Picture 1 (cartoon, rainbow, N blue to C red):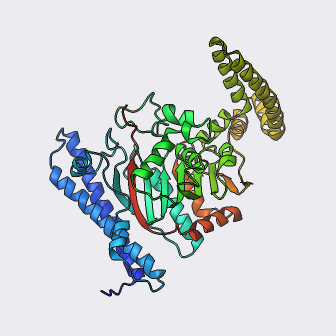
Picture 2: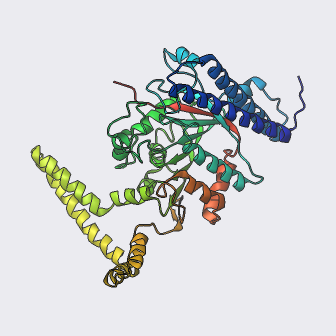
Length: 451
């Protein structure tokens, strides 16, 4: 059957359908909350589930229309397979495991996450990319994904997201920790998310190995469970612990080489410099750091020689108590090496920040606390500028202060305006690889299974 379809009109209709779907989904959860406040959990379940299913169907149809419009725009005379496009419009959604059918009947997971459903995939608002040229479309893409990272209705606390653009092209979206602003020891008893600060983010910060990063290993396992085929090309966008995880995956030659090909990584809101030398050759990385991002600054201090010296001394004591003489001696040598590095670091710091240190001293002597405080704050920000590390780009920018500089909104504003040639070239390469397209977005559960 031959069908005439205007791609421009189809995209407009699809985006309208997505907006209606968003509204229905929000209404379903608003009623969930109101009924829960009245201790009427489960009341009106059929109506609420109908709203959710209507939203999901609108999103699925919206993705189908945009996928079809994209194929028509790029048409080479090959007939389109509607069944194949409809399958792509559902992304990698689906319940996992023996009780998947039951969970499917119960509908969308709670907005705060839940304890079950590991590797379940739920359809969410599809990805729509705007812009008339490759760079503007890539800006739209990265900005939208950074917004999703901070939207708990789009990606729950125990989830990450996968956008399917083609049979062999996907975008993996990795949010950061769930308990940064309100630290909570051990795993949450509400969702057991692997995105946990003390249990998994801190241990992972010490290396670029997937073996040390439970988040990375669960994402890897989830991609296999959700049927992302071997040989697929991946772009990974991560923020905070998600940026750390993105680079750990990109540095693993089995994940990035034997099973998948990670062509691009956007790592925002993390001290990523120590990981870059380990990234597999052929992967392009854009590191984004707000110079006022407190989390990035603290992470950088954690990688300093002074911090390394403290760690080596603690490890030496631990080995000595276990009568591991060889290990203890090795850590003592490591501590001395870091001590020497600390002296060099301190010398460089004094030279680089002589003006600020002088202002602090002068302000204190003259009781001019405005001068002293301003100079002290200048010591606690990163030096802005775009630098290259091999094939990778590090963009430290003067951004906003939302969430002590760490919130993704600070990064969205920058991506929309940055015009440095190295960053623009990276964005252009993202579009050239085919990632600047609309597609189905599925949130995948990565709660840590109970042993």
